[in-house]
Image (cartoon, rainbow, N blue to C red):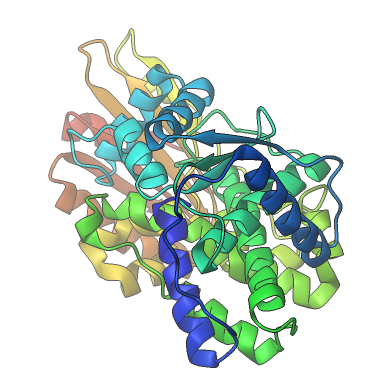
Length: 413
């Protein structure tokens, strides 16, 4: 269990209790001593059988179980992050997030993710090795232990059936990675809810109204600012679980788990917009390809491209939030059609960030343009915004004149 999953657990416990589904004793008991590995493996097998029943899939083999200390769990998580997102890439993502106002200047992404993912860890699944690691002394029984095992075993099961492929990024500023994470965490969260109803709710299936109420509890989930994590990191992590669970629940309620299975294959969601607005997914609405042409001609000689990516609807709303507030930012980010960005290192060592968006209508573009101007002004540095019909360009640069020149040169829809 990580910090986000712990918050999900508390929200679900309160919701299950309020609705009156849970039966029996739900208090966590302190184990007399660490259970032997054989007992742990046996318990994992018991939970896995019920996860198979809920998820309507079967394991090829149960994941190998390891018992680890909390320090080992932290090292494992950071090792996996470093394996798929090398430190150089982490520094680039940090720079991007700082320029967008989403991280403080001295933040280190590795430290933030390490704290978020291991702060309250009880167990985790490692796709690369197919291993389930459980922290010694956390116990095997009770609501929170059951929840952790069910959630992580769902990841293991889906990894065996469909494969869980890392994207070589932290999951931020890559919209397809955001959508993939929401599918995985949403599926594991919904399967976990169904598992708890089956095993601790008297074996009853969740009526649609009860499921709706439980998902509403998750939609309101938030990690507190007291966690020490920046808002963007807090909300980005929660998004995968909460919005992902709502998205997967809609798929499952309409087409059963077979529809969810297809979403792990050829019918995969491709944007955070599709997660946030499932009807866009159902309509097959894909992002518009946005290309930033001609930038090198407008930049000082010797400028080099450092990174390229995109800002989906979720990241776009986060970019606007501090200057515009939640409601206006959500409204201005709606109607997102596609996006791209390029980060350029200038000869003097300064950075220029060029971004382009396509919008569903001129009205959507104009609404975003107004909100983006407030954001650029609030960031306090040199920046420029240029809008035309259904496209908007935003450039952040060390000098205002350069930002304006580049923004005007970007071709817009």
